[in-house]
Image 1 (cartoon, helix red, strand yellow):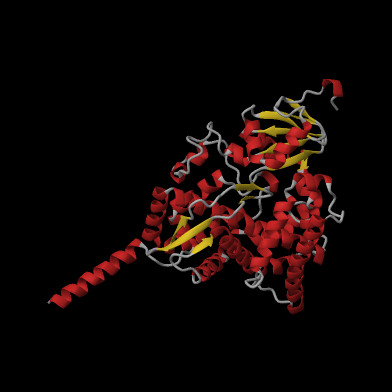
Image 2 (cartoon, one colour):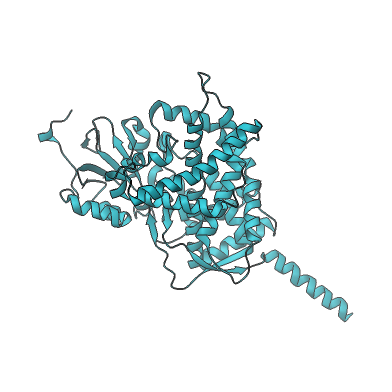
Length: 467
């Protein structure tokens, strides 16, 4: 244990300004962490009475997430939201988390994820049936409804099309309020404030849908091959199974993680493509050449490298998980500074993935930067949109496949033009979302090969008519 008079705390701009640091964190955490990064790779910050260390070098981040993960637990904001997520994978700790991870993991094996691909494309096509050339839409809301329906079908074999709009709004509200640092840290969830009462109503609404799905599945007793069936029948080493409460906690966590992160990633992707016509044209050319107008499948993904690079670059600039936080549970040292039990350690993908040390012109959207072996030439944690170590997002492969298939399905049929003067502003809640959505005007398009075939047919018909 370090003696208090010898405790060395890293320098930083907010170290002695308790109120100022807290206001900065609430008002614009992205700007605050960017400012901290300009002070160095390890920076001290006081948030009210909490001492925190901000780390901004991939090697230090790797030490926290991979080198010594047992020294830490999840951050205060996530733990303060346990009344929402319960003891799901997002918030649980220790042996209980490890047990739950073992039970959930089989649902995300490669072969099972591959079976979800057809459903992802089918639901994207069904959404497009309602789109019309020249319409104005909020593509963020479109992506939320789409990914919510996909996660309900693939993981729970449930059709929530009728509930998707309301469930999406409830989850968005819970995410936004859950990231309010002042409320989550200083207003216990059981205090009957208007906000807490509203949160209770939204949770009850989502729980009603989840319990309905779970009850129906228990009643039929049939294994439908989805994740919920697996969880219902899974047994731990001691023969125990998940209770309804544990199923509820994992279901609401997967509902959130399985749709919100992908929806936000795609929303930012459409926004970036609309501002970068050269990248959009290159994407369309690849899709036209490989797919020849048909729907994409999982077998096509290996032949769509630029499509993958578009998603990778989008998630570099606008990572759904924009920052991570941990709390030390033992005294140790990090980057030459002592870390005491109870101190927070923060890191931000938003900052590291825009660092000029690892990326040339990091503010530019350049999918081609990921061609060749670039990913191997940068430090391991210079790019970590899904976290890392034992607590890395369990659904990262699911999310990446879903994003690429949806992008390919929609980009074949439509170009999305931004509505002039509509503000697109990042909202750093638990995930990184566009605060006011992304409003676009739809322009239908035909794959180049189809246009060429159509023109050839017209020319042939004209020639035969002339003869």
